[in-house]
Length: 546
View 1 (cartoon, rainbow, N blue to C red):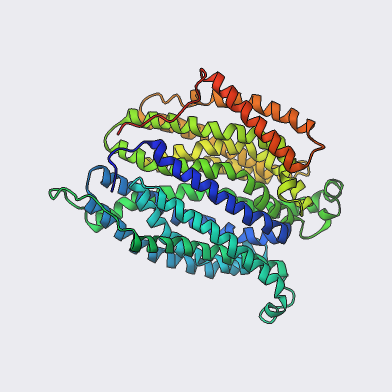
View 2 (cartoon, rainbow, N blue to C red; view 1 turned 135 degrees about the vertical axis):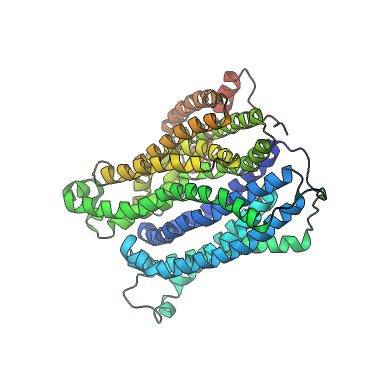
């Protein structure tokens, strides 16, 4: 039964907890996988994601947001008959869309791998990931529906199931491929690297996990019957045409915004290996001086790209994946407040989101910057060369990590109040910065490893500044968002200094013991400083006006 009054904090807490669990499973998947496949194998693995993510962004992200916004709007007015119709329309239309997208990926697999990714053997991974588009679309409808009703539990559970299945089957299929090379050689030519087939096995596990996430909702509907309040008989239910138009009105700009966001990954795929190849031709001696014999190999571009995308970016995304869940719950809440013309409530919500996100992002970025070397050594001890490259990339990504954490929830609020096109316009400007940064920095020997990270940080900084200005203009009153972040920023600075000192003090310790001790002391110092800076009261979530 729907509750009439829910705090934003209660609604949003479920998804970050789920995100932490999902990321733990994800780390147990990606870290061993990286150690098994190495930089080159992870390059094949990443190429499949390079094609899937833009298509996923056009469909899944936009679908989930549009369904959530439409359901939240109708539920806020008490029109639950319309909520059911929105759900049915979403299921049918998105099923058709998912089939079309899967076919597109399947057809484009070979030309994409050869002509765009410049990795012909990545075709096996791209083919393996094609069905994920269908299952992702179907799952997006269900998640958006429940999020619109401000019930975040189904989304959280489905995400955890996906992560668990991906962990189990992804590693199993990868290992099975490596152990049964004699069987696979009957079906492929002898020159195909075994790592390419193993990467495809891991990708197949990812695809099966998306199927499991969708099946959860079907099983849930059988065993848990939804109790929906009755609508006022006098309320008019919008026609299929009107509902479809509403969904497209939100979906298209949100999907475009997500596409532009994921274009950073696509730009890295298209530019990194080509620019690194250019650097090999122009500055061979400097690269050999810096990276040794590895720089002579034709696999050097794929090696660096795989290390960046599957190691540095994996660690980079840990904190945003948690804070972004606040955005998912902020969207339906903002939509409901906007329907009631409660602009003050939206301003309060924006301040709360920023304060909460900043409290997690600043210390995480500071500590990771100081501890990047031991963290990478612990996570990727079997791949020291890749870990060395990824450490430099990670440190250049961390300023962007803070900006990304702040950007996503604010974009969700804009989407919730019907300003979904605004983030797209801001991101397009950021994409130009990202592309220019990649093209200028990556070919230079001094920046080739960290160049993509620097460009990514610049991308998110530009977007954050633009989004803040546009949200203030849309709400029509001062938001005072950045006044909420100085306290956690200052506390994080102090705790990072302590972590830096302790890192050097414990350098001779066991790595796990050292990281655990330093992290514990850093956390205590951070909370203590935050307690002092906030008037001896650590900020807590404020209940939103309904």
